[in-house]
Every structure is written in structure tokens, then in C-alpha cells.
Image 1: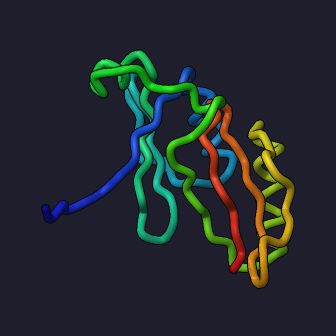
Image 2: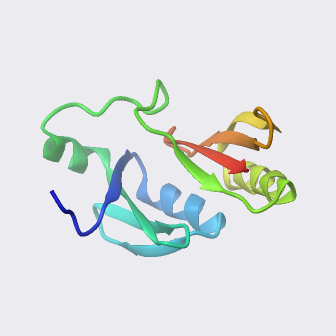
Image 3: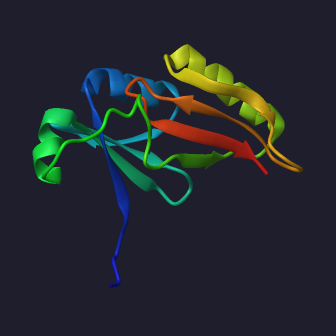
Length: 128
């Protein structure tokens, strides 16, 4: 296999809420429809599409687990400094995200926190 691109598809309950959350955090919007909202992440413009659950689930040919109960994958967002990690924690909280773990050191040279978006999708934020 030699795919040209890779992106992620998440299910959400409310497109307006998801769009507002990621816009407030400063991510670049990649467009929307009545079925999805999409954002670019990072310098390489990794795409995450956030589909309404009732649209994505039939396409996946099976049930989509509740992200608030557990995650199959957790994306990591890289921060340039410890101060940036602390600022992002505040921004996530103000945007309506859930702080799963406050900023802390994880071994030598790692500092970060974990948050969940309004639908329970988890992200690590790390300065390394």
C-alpha cells in the first residue's frame, strides 16, 4: 500500500459545539457540511473530520464506542515550551474541554497534560 494521505474520522453529537470548541482553540477550519466539520492540526495540516455519529456509524458498518468510556487512539499535540503547555490547558478549559490530567512532568524531559473534547475524544499536549 502507498496511500497519498491519511486523516482521522471521529464521531460527534453536535457539529456546532465541535466547531466552536476547535475554533476557540485556534485550529484552522477545513470546511463543514450538514454531516461533518473538519479541522487541520499541526504544521503538516493533519486533517480530522468530525462526523455526526448517525452519519459515521453506518459507514463504519458497526457501532462506534462512546469516546467518554475509553479511546482507541489518543493524538499528541506538541508544544514548544512548558509555558505554552500551561496556556493551552487554560484555553482548553475555557473552550469547554475536560482536563483529564493537569500539566505535570512525565519522566525526564516530558511535561504535559491530557484533555478531552466535548465528545470525549482525548488528546495529549506535551513539551519534550
